[in-house]
Amino acid sequence: MTSTLRLALETWGVGRELSLQEDDRRPDFNTLRTQSKDSDSREGEHSESTIDKAKVHELLKKELKEGEIEAGVLQASRRSKSKFRPLSSEEIHAAIVDWL
Image 1 (cartoon, one colour):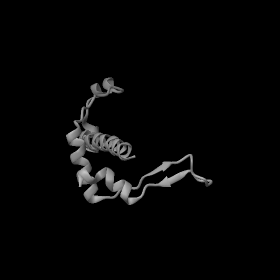
Image 2 (cartoon, helix red, strand yellow; image 1 turned 60 degrees about the vertical axis):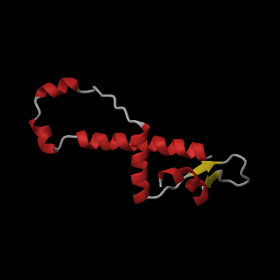
Image 3 (cartoon, one colour; image 1 turned 30 degrees about the vertical axis):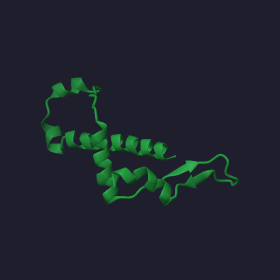
């Protein structure tokens, strides 16, 4: 369970980092108004970003200081209507202890 949660957090961290990068590249309204029409021809293009694992781990350390994690699993063997089981704080802590 610990390795699965760590992978999920790293995946979230990659998405968060890309989102932050995109916010930094997003022009403000004044910039948008002054762009030339040449930029319209580039519509639909995208660039690839690479993020190393160390950078993701640093982001996770920062985010863990400011927030908290809530996670759960679907447990098919559970004998109730709901198969969802929230992870305990001990299960979460075991996954994040290296980042604290």
